[in-house]
Image 1: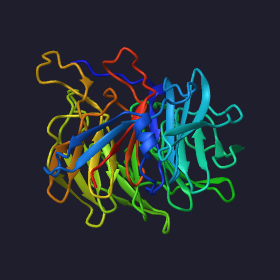
Image 2: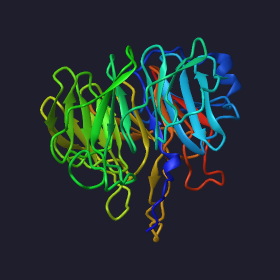
Image 3: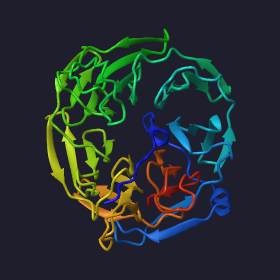
Image 4: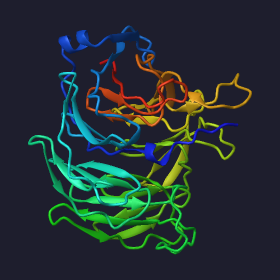
Length: 387
């Protein structure tokens, strides 16, 4: 069994604000970039779902490194950080066009990841580079670095950034165990106040809390994992969550439940299983599994369905169990507890791609291919569901 090892530098952190509405691509946009139309499998009628390729990204956006993104409600901001330096560009889906942004001052923090958060006005970047970009003016300003080490995730509450550094399998420091479980991994959080440019440590989570995936529900920060917990910033208090295995899974908030789909089994097989966690009842229930196993896929919620793109899978005919890029995307409809295939995308399969829902389309960009000659990908496409 061969399991793909994603280098630390390839970790993709995707952080977005709540979905906003954008105009559908113009006719000129669609004509400039090929469109693929297929009869909608989800409905069985003559309506069509469509894909169209994105305009080529600026050459400076190389995905051989850490990649972050933020959806502003109008543009997708993409930052890549690697051997070529720290570069940012903005993609406007209404015009199918990119524009480059200036570079910030060189970072000085020894961060292991880069996080991006959209706060309604600026893209806040934390990690190796700690700075805020105003895309309207094209200017950067420095930010206070977070007081956390290791791999982290971050969410925007509408007032502050909540950051969590949790078990991930990459970070080990046996001389520093602030969470007290002596496993060498931080399981601690901090809150960033953008008004005062200050950080404050969160109260200690319940003993033994572990998890490297976070979701913001509108009232709580959910730390999803084998021993998850929920943090309420209004009361600065925690509560315990049931155990959920998120290894290699996509974790998506629908507005009422968390959908945890796919992942990697202990024997390195890609999983087809899916679960739904309801924070109102604090219960986890199984939902219909995917048609086949996937791991490290990207997923977005379009308001009605979970859209899953890319990931890694193990073909049934592959006796050695080597991973390969998954096939066409999938859509899960919770109203019928059923999965359907999406039309084939006009771009190669990939893992760890940026995926955002704009309000009318899903944009998929970048990522890593297990089979393509050029493993690091810097292209993308937009999926437009039938209306």
